[in-house]
Length: 128
View (cartoon, rainbow, N blue to C red):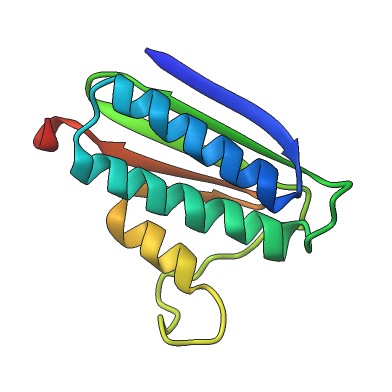
């Protein structure tokens, strides 16, 4: 099992650096291109939500991201310092807010929301 874990300030440069470094490590781990695409999209959506909505672009606030991966699955967990959300899977995907979470919910095998922590699971077995 590989674990990538990092905490960083709410800064777009740091976010991009973390994402790019993580994807390089995952590619070296042998993740398929299809799954790398899913993982990148999930990371982008969850971290950008933390940046914009959770931490309100406040540099002094921290975003924590962990990625755990083994031969069967990838788990991505993002936590910010926001007040949290109440995600409604029945909400209209064309509404003003929440489209990113609907995308993550759709492309991941499972998504859990616990206040300001969002966890997404991606099965790697079918695409290896």
